[in-house]
Length: 322
Ligand SMILES: Nc1ncnc2c1ncn2[C@@H]1O[C@H](COP(=O)(O)OP(=O)(O)OP(=O)(O)O)[C@@H](O)[C@H]1O
Ligand SMILES: [Mg+2]
Image (cartoon, rainbow, N blue to C red; front, top):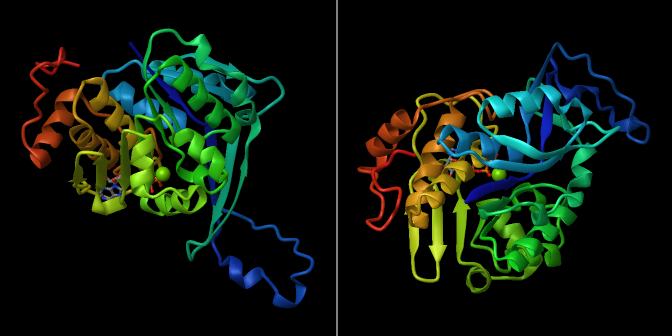
């Protein structure tokens, strides 16, 4: 059975400005702003929720199938993802478009000015789960909002178990779009801030969400996460990082770990612990795809924090050689 990851494919262009933006905004000239900041460093990084989640799944021994749209600038990124163990055969390159791109300048006070160009991501709705055979588990992570609703609809119709992960698109999606994603999901996953947006926009309480989805997972940064189902509520601890380098992709790595646990047949709260461990590795490295580990290293780290990692007795993967 395949694990399918959908979500944006993007490049992040990160620049640093050796001054303070606020000193350049002149209150008396706010009716006509024309500013150019001379930045002294620029970094281009591979990003996007889809590749980040798939990257963690591949590190954990899965061969995820990435289904997403990319631009003409994707060739080298594709090679990188294939080398990491990700199946990119369902990534469609859109002629005449760039990959979605995030341009962000940060100043000395950590103030940021950013733009996000959707690029090829706007074509995500041209892809469909109908072209995927034998999908056991899917994740619908931030992407073109229309495509996210369409994928959820296809998963419901085709009986595919899916995780609805609206994350940063909670800000953009309407209440009815969010409701459509939640209805029939195996898991709805958001951070605590996004849960508030989801509640307000959909007018669904936690109880209502659990009437439409099997489980709700809320991540809370360094405070860990909470897994709630109709039967139980479990707090899952965060794993303290040895060093805190860069939070980019931490939420995506968590989702990759969670999906690995589900693929192994673990209960959701145990699968979420795998998410905690995976997230911490991402936190310790720059960008969302610069960390690496073996299964043995990962398992050792898991067991240091959570005790023995044991599969349910009836799990065909018991014995733990993923
Ligand atoms: N400072 C931290 N220390 C340890 N673990 C962390 C820390 N921050 C995040 N995590 C882990 O990552 C998980 C997801 O983090 P968080 O709730 O910040 O997601 P997010 O806001 O969606 O992140 P992102 O910025 O990637 O979208 C947490 O549940 C936790 O396991
Ligand atoms: Mg997030």
